[in-house]
Image (tube, rainbow, N blue to C red; front, top):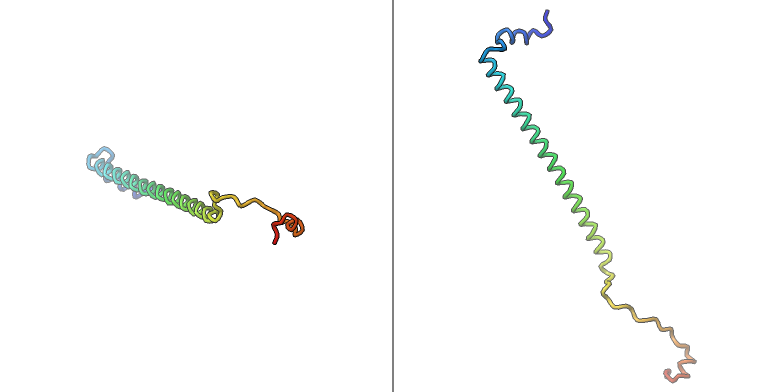
Length: 102
């Protein structure tokens, strides 16, 4: 008993050098190559799409973080003037002596 009877039967009905069999083989080979190209194109497009979506998510996350930082520090305005200098209060006796006190 041969190990691959179906291949043997197919081979016996069509010889390797027959023109009709070579056309069939060529068509099958072209179909297999076309399917391979289509599948690889689909997989590469899915990969590119996932990379783009990941980059967009990272960009949005960094923009949100920048917005949160801006919100935290928006109350502190660096362009505002400096507070007035500290002046300690004069004791009452010193104020009376200088006649500023009434």
